[in-house]
Image (cartoon, rainbow, N blue to C red; front, side):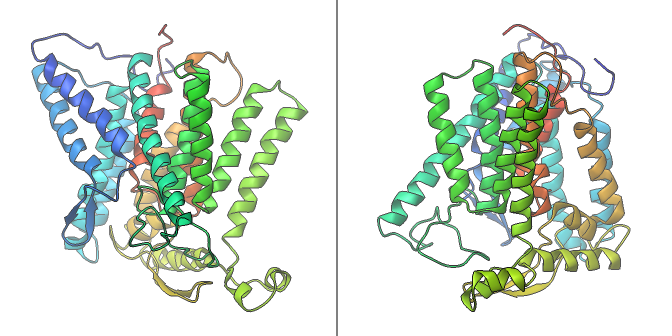
Length: 432
């Protein structure tokens, strides 16, 4: 222990209330597994919000955990990460109280507090390799569902079911040039969100194999399926896949030029994917590829970044308010469809526009508390360190890199990942 992270296992006590603790465990694992399931079994809230099944499971898990605490069946796990989480919760409350529309921001505040509590539950559940293994298998169950949803979408598309209404696994082309090809969202609300989740799943899967938790045949099958699923998202977040795979491979290589070259190649691929979103593909419908590259038009995300920055400048301290529009951009895509974009398409600009400097500083504290303790190189590469590195790379590929091109501060899998990283960074080294 270095005194900066979570304490070791809080001491799971056996009592007559142990069944309550078992209930919270199964509900929490169910929440992890059902995170990707967003397009079915939903409830509509205030005609604006979608509550997937995972949210209902979380409510039950939180209630059961609180009962277990009160009954003494579980104890709250000490963790230094609680302090930045509380600071961010305070920033969210302040942004809501000073919002341009408090009634609109209040439901969003409840959703954000839910995500913070979800991260706290992850810390309190994953207290050893035994419990982390269960979380990993729950996550991989969700990954299997995502792969199957993506495969269904592709099969239906090439069977002639190309309508978004009849093939719910498809997603719109967005800013991409239209054509006879599928862009898949699987069970998620959009393709970009699915891509970030699947990239994280790829490296978690690799770590699980390194730990000896899954067989070679299962690993190969799921790895191929997860990579194919990510590719069919046609998302700029694919750059994160190249980045984390290169970082993992460089970790396995001996320190030296080869390892540095591998890491640099992954970083270059990530940079190229990021740069691809800065140029609009719309001119391709009017001129040649070379002319488009020589005389580029700014991409949709660049326009929303600029507008998000202006929103921040107009509301610098506590932001415009939760759920307020962080941008206001009208854009004609390559398909000729006109879009009205109200999202900054960047996590940091989105927070700055909605929560101001107060929210930005608090959220940076939340993230940097984890990032500064990353251990991606050096040391013994045993089961615990492999799982720790896998989760840390999952956070890089599933959140930090995609945060540059998407507003992910309210994404369920991101907060689950952050909670698991916080838990594993001070894991006791135990036999499993």
